[in-house]
Image (cartoon, rainbow, N blue to C red; front, side, top):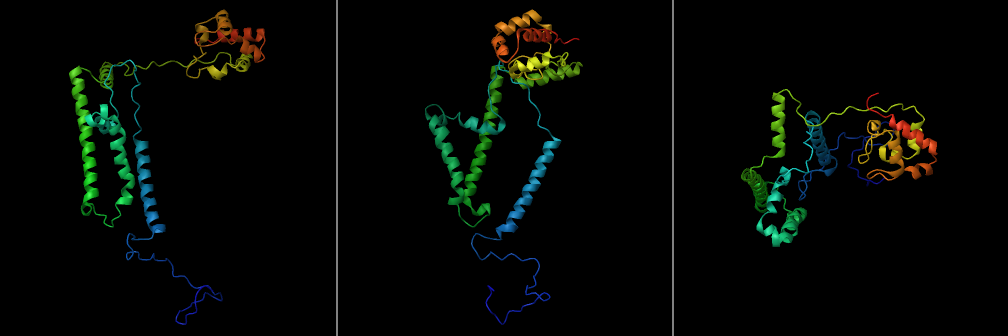
Length: 291
C-alpha cells in the first residue's frame, strides 16, 4: 500500500494473509554517524535510566527501613549557644562570613556571586555543547567543577574549625554533648536516661453520660477536641476535676479564664439550657485522674 513496487523485494506471506513475516526483535539503528547521538532514546536509553533509578530508589528505601532517622533533643529556647547550621550548609555559613559577602557587600554576596554561580549551572548545558565526555578532555568544565568542590570542602572545614575554637574560647559545651554526657552518667547509675516526663493517660470518666453529647453540642470540641485532650493551645479537660469543682467550672464557663473567653452565651446559642450547662459542669467535675 504505502510501499513502492520493487521486484527485488522478497515477500514472504503467512498463510493466506498478506501480512509480512516479522523478523523478531528490531535492532535499533546505529546513530554513531550522527553527532551527539549514540543510541535510540526510546526505549534503549530511557529503559536503562529507569532501571538505574529503580535500583537507587530500592537502596534508599532499604537504608530508610534499616536505619531510621534519629530524633534529636527537643529545642531549648533558653539555652545560650552559638548558632550553627547543619553540616551541608556550613560552606554557605562560612561564605557569608567573608568580608566581600557581608557587611557593605551583603547584596553582592547574597545575590551577585550566588546568582552568577547558579546561573552558570543553568546555562552550562547550552554553553558547553561539545561532544567530548571524558573529564580530562574538558579542561574548562572540569576545572570549574574541581574548584567548586575544593571551595566547598575548604569552607566547610573552616566553619567547623572556627566553631570549635569559638566554643573553646568561651568555655561552652554544646547542649547535645551535655545531654549525652548526662544520659551516660544516668545509664551508669541505673537512672532514666531521658528527662521527658512520662505521664499516664487519663481516661474519660463516664463517657456514656448524656453530658458527653452536651459537651459536643456546646462547641467545646472546637478547642478541647472530641477526645478532650485539647488541640495544642487549649488544655486537656481529662482530669480537670482534680483542679476545679463544679462551681469553679461554672464560673469559668460564665466568666472565662486566661485566654479562654466566656462560653456561657455561646453554649446558650448552641441550644443548651441553664440546666444543660449545669449538668455539663457537673460531668466535667467528675473528670478525675483517679477513679
